[in-house]
Image (cartoon, rainbow, N blue to C red; front, top):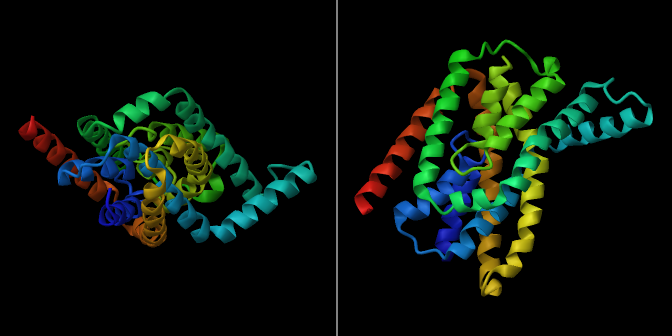
Length: 274
């Protein structure tokens, strides 16, 4: 992996982590389409660890919300009224939504790592994202605000997040869509999606730090990780701001069409090369 490749992959991660088009798919497909000869030992650790850059972006963007949520969480426990405040309820919703993805990550880690090595499998998962986005727009009534979110909503959105451990299933796309299936409006569904991504992204990134010690020539790989991390953080922050404004007025169908196009391009290239 070169410095230029690390920068490009960092930009891709920052753009696609929060846009509903699957960052993991793009981190698999881009090297394949560009025919970059990146060692397989580097691919999965780089993809997961660079997500820590976008984790920093979402924490910085929502730091005020997070402060109030965490504060309300502990005050609610102290007063023995954990669900009395909307912010304290949001804290519990985030924890509840994290459970399905956490369990999926523990039991499906090997299958997920194998999928990261297959552009073809990733392309088919990306078609799955396109279908989810399309159905969310067609089936969701989008008439509920953030104040109406319940524990059941959080659990169902968490199931959407669990699906996204596979490359090609967009985390933001599936979680926003599952929120819309529950008739939540696009913007509050997007806000919930971003907030609930924090625990699972942190856990995945920290666990992958252990994999660094298995990478050959680690000293030369760390600078590339840092470059990708910083790039993803900056671009990710901009992407969050743009998407939340976009969701107020616009449909997810545009992203569905894009996912179909990239998936079909990958499948065609795979057929030609084989």
